[in-house]
Image: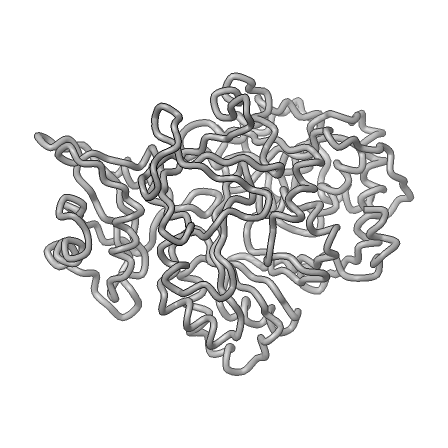
Length: 481
């Protein structure tokens, strides 16, 4: 951070509406807040919770915690009381940054609070770096969304964040201007602190709620070079009238996240926006795993999540821990320097997840295709058994997603008499279309997959429920059946 101030201190680090902050201004503000934290009793190694919306204030708070030698623990404001309480119980924070205009339920009353007004005041005071960090010092705890139980806190040291600078691949280049649309409490921001400082990247904060028109406007006016969105959002961007009126040629990379991007969408984004669209596969515990590259065929982006990133090893193993044969489905295991160092305050879960050789066992299932690209077929918790046959929902979702009348789909297994489990497809119809009937959808699937993989029921929704991390909430879908 000190070196960044010297090298490019007057370049923009953050843009939030009309508010702009340079790297020099960011670090100076952070040092003022760090001095305030020290006066309030925060010491190196203490955990500080950041319960703020994605904003410049959040960025200043995060940097201040790091400059003070403490450990930053971001909380997504969409989490519920029980989830926030569970995070607080595990992290035992010394202090919490809070928004006085939006009190977050679940934060313990006895944890001292620092409001945004107090943060703003402290950011104007003189300060200096109070702590020189070591490579192995914990720096951040990133919490999972808790879709399968209480949130787990993946913690990272400086070495892990430094390693992420190189695993980013084509997503980072000197002085990129990134459109930040995901919550700052997410790994997509919290795990990228070193990356931003190393490359001198500017973060342009997208307002909420998301809109295609505002996304196009920001790309044009803020000269955005990297932007990410889910496939349905990219489709809305292509339909936006502003796209024909504004210059978006600064955009060099678009990222398709959380769901497969249909080949025709990839081609349209490439043609209309003039940028490459890539897919990335990552997880809270390892912010870099695999990815496609510019120039990969559109079908590769739709059916795979690419190849392992530089510095990342990926193996697929069976239930006994043995590496599966080429082309077979196995549980995804990852080993990388950018990985988490463990789950905060939970050595037993850490030992159960990361083995003695440093391999992290994920909950995802996949196989490698003939070109070395990883094909995800689902999660261990999603797999269901219909009449003795394993069905991987993601495989079925990809096929249903190709249907021209389907905008989004999620498939879950539910209990059924005689055959054990059946598949239920939750479908959002494409704009101007009626969702396909069950018979039509089953025929569509049976022409492309084994007949037992075709869904047995269809439920039409206006939109799919999502978790705080914007993933499809399959637990909520199952609960409604």
